[in-house]
Length: 616
Image (tube, rainbow, N blue to C red; front, side):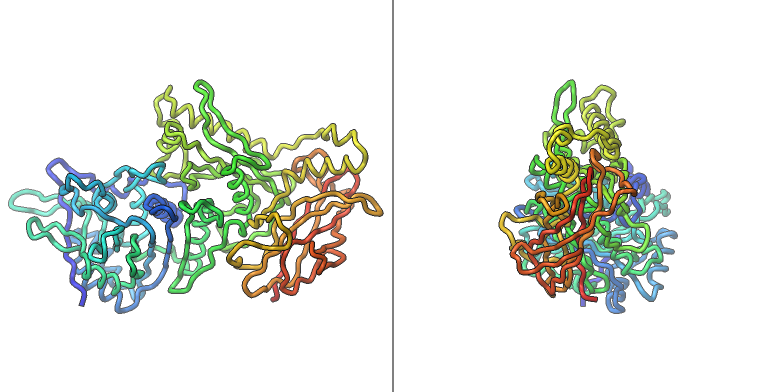
C-alpha cells in the first residue's frame, strides 16, 4: 500500500511572502486558459531538453478511475487545507463522480533535480530545478536563449484546475530510480489562525509530502514510495531511467466541453504555437515529438508540413533557417547598425483546411500573418498583415530574431510574463534594447501591411519579348512567389522516389510547382509538378487538379471574371505509367511525381492546386 502524504501550509516568513497574489503574476495573457497552459508548459519543456535530441511531449486528458480517486483523496491529498475557500473547492472535488485531469508529461528532459528546500542548497550544487518550480516564484531560467521565465508560467497550471491543485511526478536526469519524486501543491487564499496570542498568517500555498522531523515542512515522497504513488495514480511509467516530469492538473476545467473536443484543441494549440519544432526536418536538438491522448486513445497530431496553412509557414521557416528562398531578407537597425534577424515570406495557393475543431479555431481561413520568434524557435505571436486580394491565395511569414546575445536579450526581455508579445515600451527611452525591438516591429509591420498591395506595371523584359517569353515572364513573376513545394513534401533531386522515411498520416499531394512552358497546338502550355505520397494503407485513389488565372503584373492579383477559366488538360506520371486527359487521374494506390498540364490564356498566368481523394 502506498504511503500517506502529510499536509504543510506555508506560513509568512519574518520578512514576508508574496502571498495569494501569486495567481496574478501571469498578468492577462492574450490567449484563453487552455492555450496559455499549453504554451507555458511546453516552453518549460523546451528549456529542460537534454541534447542531442529534442524532448518527447505527452499530453493526456482522462478521467481517474475509482481506485485512482481513492488513492488521490486518501493517500496524496489526505488532509484538506484549513482555509475555508480551499476546503470548499476540495469538498466539491471529492464529491464529483468523475474527476477529470490533464497531464503534461515530458521525457528526455532534465527532470526536477537539485535540493528540495530553498534554504538548504549545498555549496557545490548548481541544480535548483525542483525548488525553482515547486518552491520559488518567478526565478529566471538559466537556459541559454531559453523559452521563458521559470516560475511565472506555472501559474497557468493552477488556473486550469478548478481546485488550483497539481501533483508533480519527476525523475531527475542520471540520478537513478531512488531519485523519483512526487509532491502535491495547492494555491489558495492567504488566511490567519490564532497562535499563542499572535495571529499566525499563512500565504495560501500548501504542499503534500513527507514531513521533515525537525521543522515539519514537507519534502516530496522519493524512490519506491514515489513510484508506488505515481503508479497508483496512473502516471506514465518511467522505466529504463526515462528522466523528465509529469504534471497532473487536478479537477481540470474543461469549460463544459467534451474531452475529445478539448483534446483536439490541445492538438491545435501544439501546432499553432510549436510547429517550427514539430517539422519533420527541424534540427534534431530542437524537434518535439508530440502525442495527445484522451482517455487512453491517441489523437492524430499532423505534421505541420501536411496541415495548411502551416505548410506555407514551414516553407518560410526552411528558407529562414537556410537564409535563401523566394523572399528572404535580413532586417537591420540603424545607429547602431545591427542585424536584428531574418524575415522569410511565402505566398501560395490557399489549400483546403483540415479543421480540428468545429468553432473558434486558432487557424485563419486565409493566412496573412508573420510568425514572430526568437532563436529558440517558439512562436511568440502572429503579426497581422493585409490579406491578398484574391481569396484563393494567401501568404505566410516567419521572423527569427538574431542569436546575437545583445539582440536576443532585447527581444527576450521585451516579453511579458506570458511570453506572448514583444513590448519595447518597458525599456528606458534611449536604450539599445528598445531601439532594436521597435525597429524590428516597425519593419515587420510595414512588410505585413504591404503584402496585399500588388504592382500594376508588367515586367518590362517580359513585355518586350516574343509570345512564349512574355508568358514565361508572367509565370515567373507570379509563380516564383505563389508556387512552391507546399503540403510539406520536399521534392527530391531524383524523380519518382519518395525518400521521406515514415509514411504520412494521409495520402496527399505536394503543392504544385511550376516547371516549364511548352508550345501546344493552341498556344503555350504550363507544366506543373506535384508529388503524391501514400499513407500506410495506400488509401489515395485519385489525384485531382484545378487551375486558376492570375492577371499579368500582379504578384498575387485579383481574378478577372471576364477571362476564360483555365482547365487542366492532362495529368501524367513522370515515369509514363499513369496518365489521363482532364483534371482527374486514377491512382489506385500509386505514388510518385506527376506533371499537370494547363493551357495559358492570353496576358495571364495560371496557378494550380492538387489534392488526393481517398476511398470513402
